[in-house]
Image (cartoon, rainbow, N blue to C red; front, top):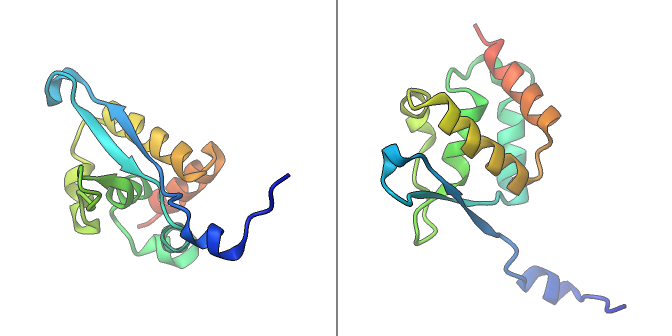
Length: 124
């Protein structure tokens, strides 16, 4: 067994990315690149979609997670949280495919996603 040091842990490049294949409507062979969330990013997302915070957000959890994990080839975020409404106008099946991949990448269980999405959808 090899124990890791503090410096090794903090220096590790542990923010993996995955490519999610998209339907032909986006172009032949098109993929969406997703980067996992940091602990801070995940906590902010969870806090935004629990309790009273969820009631004031009209974008929805699924759009928020897409904005938080979809990246360009250079690693920069593709969308902003202000893009939530536009994201929700895209094909629901495609969005769900990307959200499912993002959830798996970020360690959200289906129960986590459903609960956070429910909190968001219960908003007035």
